[in-house]
Image 1 (tube, rainbow, N blue to C red):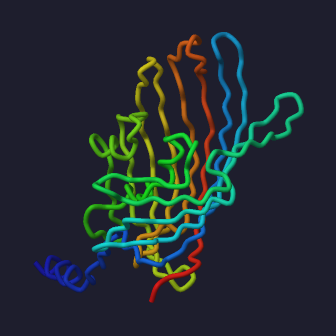
Image 2 (cartoon, rainbow, N blue to C red):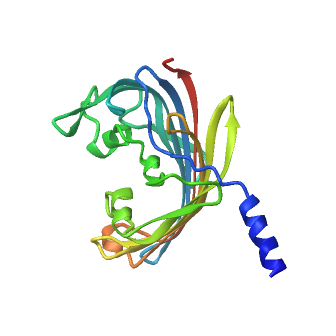
Amino acid sequence: MTRLLILLALVLQEPAREKIEIRVRPVQGDKIEIVENWTHSFRGKLGEESLNTVSRGGRRLVVEMAAVEKGVLTRKVVQIPDSYIENQDVLTSKFIRKDNALHGRTATVERRDGREVFGGVEGVPEAEQKTIGLEDPLTRLFPDKPVAVGDSWEISGEGLKKFFPGGDFSDGSITISLRDIQDVGGRRCAYLRTIYDVSGKSPDGSSRALNLQGTLTVWIERGYVLAMSQSGRMTTTGADPKTQQPNGEAVVTGELKATILEKSK
C-alpha cells in the first residue's frame, strides 16, 4: 500500500507536458528566401544493360505572402532567381547544367473560385508550376491536433493520396514525431523527425519503394518550414524495358534552408 501511494505521488508531481499546435499561420507581407538542393544516384539496369547515373539540382526562391484572408494564404509572389538540374556525363564525370522552365521567372499564384491561378509562367509545364503552389507540400506532414514532445503521428491510406497526389506511393506510411522544441535565431521552433516507408505501383506495371529518414524545423508562430533534411533509397522493380524505365536502386538526398527576409509586425 505504501509503495502504491509513493508511485501515485510521483505521478501527480510530474508536470503536464506542453502541447503545441503546428499549423500554417501566414501573415501578409512576410517574405522568405528558400534554397533547395537534391541529389539522385542510380544503379541498375535498363533491360539487360547496366545503367549508372548521377543527377542533382536545386533552386532558390523568394516568396512573398501577398494576400492572407481569414488566416489563409490566397495570393503569393514567387521570384525564382535560380532553378536547375545537372546530369553527370559518364565519360568525363563532369556535370552538365540545364535550367528549368521556372528559372529566372517571377510568378504569381492566387486562389480564384476555389482553384489556383498562375501568372508569369507561360510555357512552363503544369507539373513544374504546381511546385510553387500556395500550399507547401511539407506542411502536409503537420499533425491534425496539438502534440507534445515525444508524440508521434502517422500518414497512411487516404492521407498518402493527399501527400502524393500523383499516386506514386499509396501503400505503407510516413511516421512523424515531435522530438524537441528549440530556439532558432530567436524563433521558437518545432524539431520534427520523419520516416518514410512507402511503396506503390505505376500504371506501367513497375513497383517503387521509398525509404527515407529526415528532419524538419518549423517556426511555430507561423508554421513556415525553416529547414529540412532527408536521405534514403528508392527501389524500382518490374519495369518493362519498352517503357524506357530502368530497374534498380537510387540513393536520394534532399535539403532545404529558409531565411526570413521580412515579416509583418
